[in-house]
Length: 244
Image (cartoon, rainbow, N blue to C red; front, side, top):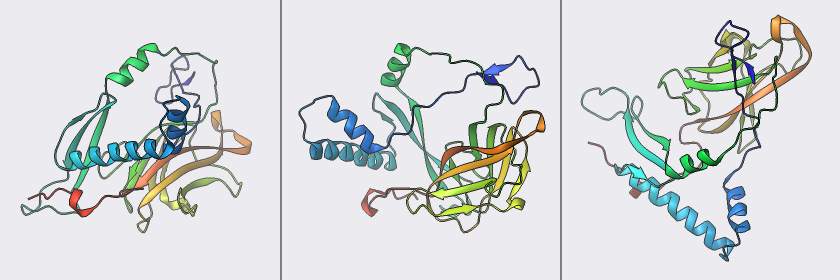
């Protein structure tokens, strides 16, 4: 439990997840093999890859998907200009929501409350100012909101600041101070670099800010996964819809 950063009532608290870690597709393959299905590793990879490819193709051809695990709906974003599709101002977005399998797992899940943290640092959500999307997508050259608690970037340590680490190349971009246009404990407004390349990134806020505006001796940090453009992966020309 942690104080709710959006209210002034000290008794108002929220639950903050103590994460187990991050799992990529290879971790999922390992868990599938641990189920002792008798399937060869290459068979598992083939089936999962085929499932992903077919789902993506169907979505890009206008299907609404109900897989049991998730429900997905493709949407077209941006205003119409001159009766034409403009990739500069229009985009395709797929909205996902939990389906039966997830709901059944939620019903079986028990929560263990580990205690209360008065000075915890966390991120609750992000938002792309241009699109209004809160799925971690960023638009280069536009504002990006990061909301949570104890996020204010403050301190003299050289490591203090906001960085973007490309998860593929490991290249790190540190935002200049004037690119943090709003610097509050509960919300940061960040101006994304205009030349930020497409890809997946880890956005990290590192600060010495503590509760009641006191400076911590050592910096602390919190991170969130974000991405620009299509991020990782891709598809063939034949899989893409023609929009008229």
